[in-house]
Length: 193
Image (cartoon, rainbow, N blue to C red; front, side, top):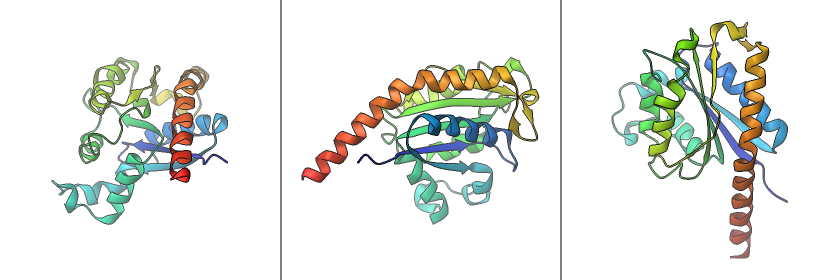
């Protein structure tokens, strides 16, 4: 029997409730509808006080270390961030500064962002994609960008956004299938050892 894939979403939203977290949960649910997985949402706004003064990973409390380890051990990663001054939030970058540089190699990463207007939509390709290219992650072909008007009571509502999110997940499934195959092969190798 194959184990469920570990699906971890990181939301760079600073408040709760958060549109970035709502978009992350929507994307995780779409993936979980297609693939057997365990879901975990990391909300950076909740970790902010514990992250703020740390310069080295060894200075972080156990609660933050657990979330970093969850991302590093994930089979699939979803990242969402509000656009802040044309880029991801500083807290989002600070969190990923603590991720080991080899931890995300070849992992599928679905990129998403939220913003006040459509004018920031290219932030996914100009900011997020290069960050995860550094990690040698497999950034998935379609990013998902949402504006404030796409939500009602912090729930994804806009039909065009719902369709784009579904298309992004459908296009991601072949890469996720490769992850499942690699994960199963590793599990079988460990069992044989």
